[in-house]
Image 1 (cartoon, helix red, strand yellow):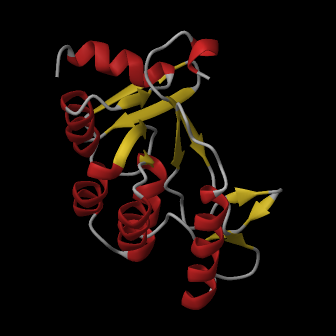
Image 2: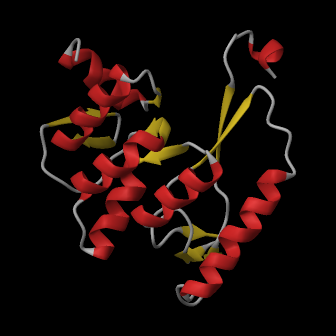
Length: 178
């Protein structure tokens, strides 16, 4: 894959590993069975030159035209356990994880502190929180929060790859060197 992209490092591929249900959240043993199936599937893939990054997910995604219940890569402890057991990194999706923390009534900042060391890529997008600065790009409105600034700094220090939307790129440029 490296030759197709003209780079010397592993190609990062962000994946949604599935694990949603239609009517309600899965029971603990059902979730564990999903994680086991995922481990078996990943063990069959040749990952030379590729870094697969399961994305953190929101608890209530919109899949196939309706609200569903996401069960995998939503809760902090499950994410950490899976990453440690499988020597795997993740894509830390800030908006998804903020939604999960709001649903579970847990600290988003603590979630990020615990999960960020397992992140190889960050998706930064809008989510409710303390506003630092608001930008308007066409009709799009995006809010940058203090937690985003901390994660951007963490990402830059640890050389993580970042996926910025157009509005986020403008904000990072305005804030100068972090």
